[in-house]
Image 1 (cartoon, rainbow, N blue to C red):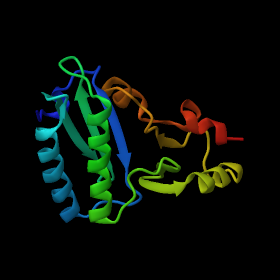
Image 2 (image 1 turned 180 degrees about the horizontal axis):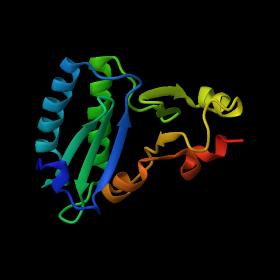
Image 3 (image 1 turned 30 degrees about the vertical axis):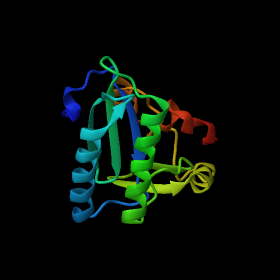
Length: 161
């Protein structure tokens, strides 16, 4: 059951998928249509799941699931990953590689491999105050409060000298 992402409770489970590049306007329309359809069909053991989504900065797909009514099962999570894989293939983007870092570079959002980010930290091109996107958040509350954070306040801090 599709619902507005903003109406999901803060305890809702979230999954953040980052793209290695910005989506085009045509891709955004495609993603929105496909995601709406997927979420209207998404179930766990035959029970409808109350879910919503948002696309942030033309680069991140955020799925949210209200687990108060029904929780995602292994099969339903697999279905969502399969859906994201289909988007990847259709648009020739990378949405599942967790070995990449997205961060603010001034007013712009940059995307680098973890190896490159590590080198940049060593060279002081990024600092403890560089705002990164912590895609490991698990709930909507964490997403709202801890998704865009200083590198020193996320798992990225291990790469800072």
